[in-house]
Length: 126
Image (cartoon, rainbow, N blue to C red; front, side):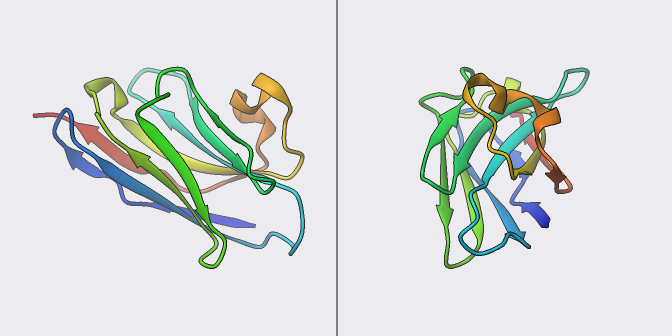
């Protein structure tokens, strides 16, 4: 399994940005989840959002109402649409894959994810 995140950059407060996570290697018809995590300077890695192959979606409290996760199965890509960005959103964003699809709040635990891509930097600054 491989995951590759892209789309980061510099954006002004209040702006929007869309991240992409291209994934490969999951067996067809298999049940799994793709999540976005982020790690800001001096902070622990934080769960942002997750989407499972059954369509279930979760968001971290800090991004609810501002971020939207979606999946294009034809392109094997998961997107994270980020809006109303704040300086606190500045972080390296990672996408991760979970073959066991952790239940409930466990989706927020980075240790539950077996596969990780390289991060993409998002900087929110004027």
